[in-house]
Length: 630
Image 1: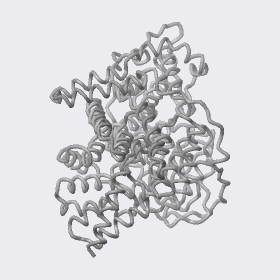
Image 2 (image 1 turned 120 degrees about the vertical axis):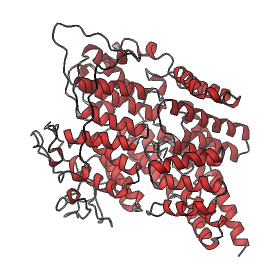
Image 3 (image 1 turned 90 degrees about the horizontal axis):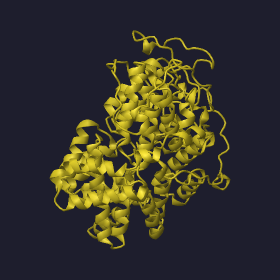
Image 4 (image 1 turned 180 degrees about the vertical axis):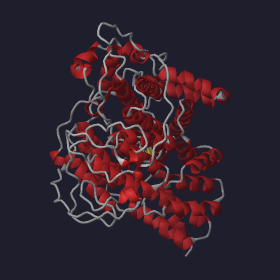
C-alpha cells in the first residue's frame, strides 16, 4: 500500500495507513454506485450463499472475460446530465456495450476559492472552458470563482458519537486475539521456522478470523438494523455509515435474494473498505468472491467492475485497478467509485499528469468529498499545498456524515502535521474523533502529532491502542521507534518483528507489500531485503515514494552514489516531505555534496522538526557534524 492510499499505514515518512495506507496513511472514502436489486423468482426459496454465511465455498458459475475500455483521458468533457434524466452514451463508450449510466447526481457546491490556484486545472466544483481533458491537456481555466464557505472551527465540532469497535466485525476475531495471533506468529518466525512462513501465514489468517460464523449469527440483528435493505441497496449510504452493520445486512440480504447482483457488488466493496481499517486481509478473498458472483449474475455491471478496481488497489495491483476502473467507466461514466479508483491508480503508478486530468474529470462528473480529497492530494504531490488545504477545508464544510467528517478532518490533520503545524493538526484530529471516536487513522495521526510536539508518553499510549486494534506496518514502526527512542529496545524489536509477520500474512493473502517491506527493513531489518523490495516496486511503479524507498535502501546498503539520482527524483515534483529531505540530505552528505546536504537537512527540520523520533535526531546530528566541518 502506497503512502497515501491507506491512511492507516503511514510511518517514518510513508503513510502508515495512507493506505492505503495507512501513507497511514493515508489515504479512500467508502462510496459506490447504487445497485439495482434483482429479486429471485417468486415462489422459490434461495439457498443461503457461502459468502453470506462467512464460509469460502460459494463460487460463481462463470465469470465473464474482461473487456478492454478506453482511458478516461479519452472521455467526454464530463458534463453532468440533468438529475432524473438518462444520459446519452458517452464518446468513451463508443463501440462498447451501450449500457446507460446510472442517474448522475445533482452538482454539489465545489470547494470555494479565495484565490485562483497557480495550477492549470480548475479547482473542484468550478465551471471551466472547453473540455481540455478530452484532448489530454490541462488548459481548462475557471470562468468564475465561488465565494468561500464559512469554515467550521474545532470548537464547533459535533459531539462524539459512538462507533463500533473493530471486534464487532462478523468476519474477524476480536482485536486482542488477532494481535496475540500475530505476536505468536512473529515468535515462531524468529525461532527459525521461516521455511514454513507461508503455511504459518495461512494458519495465522485462520486465527485472526476465528469465530467469524459464530459472530455473524443468522443476520437477524442486522436485518432489524437496516430493514429497508431488502429492496434496494443504497451503496453510498451503507458504505459511508457503519460498515459492520452494512456487511451484516448485506449478508442477510443476499441469502434472501441471491440473484441481486448489485447487493453482491456492494458486499464485495464493503469487505474491501473494512479490510482497510481493521487489517483483516482475509476479507479480500471474500470480496473477490462476492464481486465475481455479481459479474456472473450480470456480466459487465459497473458496480462490480468498480469494486474490482478498489480490490486491486487494496492489493496494490494498480495496473489492474486502472483497467477495471476504465471498464467500469465505459458502462457508467458517472460512477463515483470508478472515477476515484482511476485517480488512485494513476497516482500510485506515478502518472501524476494523468491523475490531475482524471481528478478534473471526476470533479465535473461527481463533485463531492471523495473527489475533493483526491484532487487535494494530487495538488499536494505537485507542491501546491495552498490549493490542497483550501480544497480540503471546503470538503470538510461539505461533509454531511460522521464518516466523511472523520475522513476529511484526518486528511487535514495529516497535511498540517507534515508542515510542522502540530497544534492545528491536533485540532483537526480532535474534530475527526468527535465525529467517530474509533477512527483509527485519526488516532494514529494524533499520536504522531503528539510525538512531534514532545508528548512521547501520550503518543505511545495512543499508538498502543491503534496497534491493538489494527496491527499494520505504519503504526507498528512508529510505535517501535518511540520505544527505541526512550531506550526500550526489547519492545521496539517486538514491533519490528510484528511488521515482518504482517508482511508474510499479507503476501500469503495476495497483497503486494514490497514498499512496506522496503521502508521498514531499510531502518529496522535486513537492508538487502529492503533493496530487493524497493527495486521490485520501482520496476512496477515509479512514484515519489518508491524513488525515496529505493534511494534509502541503496544508501543503507552502502551504495550512496547509486542512491543520489533516486533521492533527487523523489523531491523533483515539488512534493515536500521531511523524511524525503532527510534521506536526500544524508545521501548527499555520504557522497560529498556537503553544501547540498546542509540545505536538505535544514529544509527537513524547518518543514517538520518532529517528522520521526529517530530520523529527526539523526538529521540534527548530521547537520551538527556538517557545521563543525565548515
